[in-house]
Length: 295
Image (cartoon, rainbow, N blue to C red):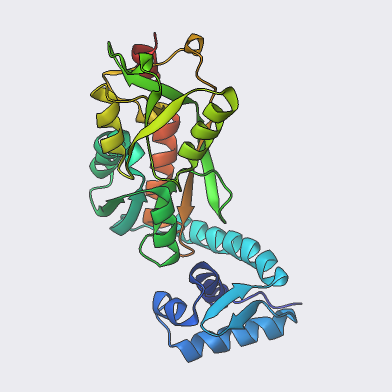
């Protein structure tokens, strides 16, 4: 009978894959670097394949490493679920959570406050910033869980919500009538900006980028102040915004994809509690704000 794989080795392997560094991975799994190196050597010997490519200080996955990474994550998750099933203790601990500020208006006061009421022993430390920064922070080990908006083109982004993107202006404002059309949007790395501006270019719409900020609150303020037109997903719409109807000639926008990403250790227990709460709560967001904003 073949002996099962060592979950401790798989945990170290996934930590290296997540951060691209033996040194950082050793810190995350609370082992010495030499101990982690020995674990990987034994894992590679056991599987008969090279799993990691070492180039100076950087580490990357081989093809066999990518295949193992996907399956190792599933094994770690299953292990956490089994331990949870037989655990009788209360959920307690702290979670480092990152969320784009586009969603902070809805997530923080509503979803996270209800989570704190039902799980008072779990402390959630929240950071709000752009998805690109959150993804970088996840790789650097600064977060346990993040919500991000770029679909599932990142490893182990769990797509859980797709939303319509809307062109928006201020209720009763005149920004929509201006020529060229003034646009408020994120920086050049923002995927929503790229889609919106390419769509405007294809239709030949005369526009100018009047306001640029990586802060969603600043963009929303520009829209609400009637200084520019913007674009937002359903769950980021705010009172005072007007959804611009199709008959105003603005192009359709690609749907926003919202995903959850976990660190390789963030399965089971407190992490599943928060992840499941976010997925369920955002899945049940009411449609009232869209109806109120629509013409």
